[in-house]
Image (cartoon, rainbow, N blue to C red; front, side, top):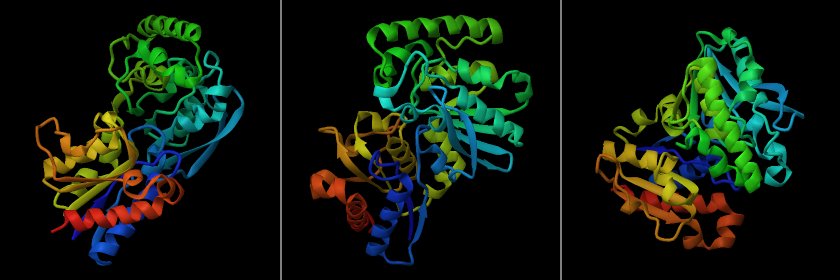
Length: 345
């Protein structure tokens, strides 16, 4: 028997790797220790991208979002580097929305990480964006990497978890970064000016580019200055870890996340895994901490119209909030055993 385990993190409770290990334990308890279980913790391009792609093996001292120096972990394997911008320019580093200065927050540290990766021999850089404190349109990062000619020939892929347009970034994400309505107006005008600057400087129009608004416009800035590819984050990670090949021919796939909602099926891990399972004809189990009322993967259809055989376990509904929040991994283990019992013939 072959089982593929590929959950996202349960934000604030457990990492994707911890959840995957708990699911594996539950599956093995149900189907036996000799089952082939491939654990491939996933992410959608936001926080958790670095862990999903192998975890850090390098640390650099860089400029944090509010200019204080921070130690940022990243990864280099062969000529490929993985940089998670939240580790250099993230909202948590700024003290959350309450401690952030939305007008001053900079992506300079992310640019410094990319430059460090290239100086260390990287010819390909994957940048996970998400959890940012910034709405500087990536200008801080580009300035930190100047002159950009030293990055010539380097392939940069930005793993995006949203499709937001460049000039919409402040309006959509500014409030969660602590920006007031007047500050959102100022940040939007800043982004509009950067559209003109980037077009003049690099010959690239980022105004209507899908995903350019990710991380407060960092994605658009990298697309303009570095000719970076802006790609769906889950697809980038799935390809890197070989998820499509792992699911092909499997007997069961189990995914999950902390909270299931309508957005879970739009470029996020759960929706991406279900789509792959539908295409491969593999039954899929989903375990989540909680869900938006009425949300059920059984009602979901892939873009191609196919729907995998699915079963959902919601921890708070099955085990209650106290156990689900206080002993999450034990609850995940039991849920996985239930999924394996009901989905494997």
